[in-house]
Length: 264
Image 1 (cartoon, rainbow, N blue to C red):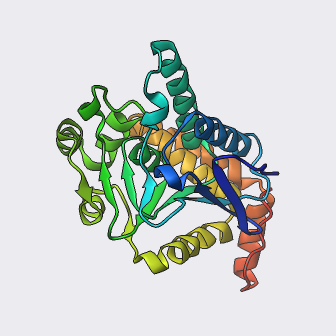
Image 2: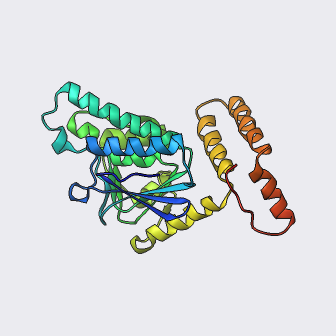
Image 3: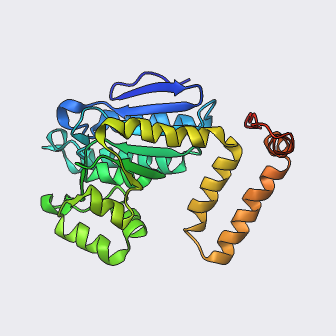
């Protein structure tokens, strides 16, 4: 059961598909402490028990900004202790997002700056509108990316491109984000939600345990050498052999019908 949140809107748009909206449009959906706690709670609940949820779509309220990053008005005047405490919440939320067993797709309805871009990078993949702009601007205010930017961006775009993006703090376009591998597709604003939901529905139609194991294998394998990754892959694969969904999938194929997967 997904509760109500102060800074998030959550909606089951299908029996197995959860739409999550960052809901602080008056400040560009900037991340404050409450949003950090809300997202941490949400991702942790999905780690503990996804229930019927097979895929999540994450977007922002409004038409211009997905997430502007950290709420600098709230941060103004913070002590070091207060700043570090808030950032630890953000770190735990990011880690929980990346550990979420079900796929999380970002539907980028507008600009994604600083911590907003880092949130996008922590998702499994992303679609964006043509007008979206992206940037890691932290060095302009005396800090540096601390929500995963220096680690996740190079994995998406390569080391040299990441250094240019981070050290100059220059924004880049949706077209560049697509070319460099930050996003997977550009969608017109009027069709963004439906295109992302269509992809999410395709994921939801597949065997949920298979999707979760494949996601975990890809992510863990990229953190290690190929031989260790292959060993992890076969362990993940073998856990699916004795499942009801595997038997149902093979049976449905032979009976020439659509399988009915139950996640067991």
